[in-house]
Length: 68
Image 1 (cartoon, rainbow, N blue to C red):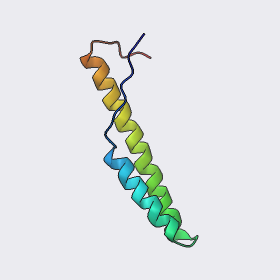
Image 2: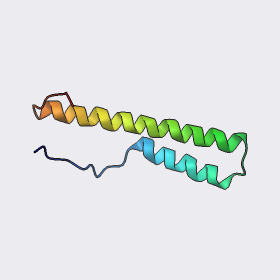
Image 3: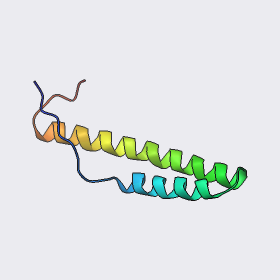
Image 4: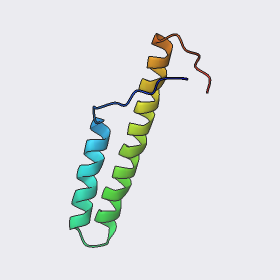
């Protein structure tokens, strides 16, 4: 069975996304709030891509196949 590694570091993208969402929560509904929420969503997607890339890099270094 493959061993699962859990990262203890938090992505910079996720930290920024959290900050944008906190700021958006302080605003009344409207265009500015929506823009901050959309920006946070994009940052979250970047964090997911970064994590996937990092995970695939570790697989390669450990000699595992890139499939799956």
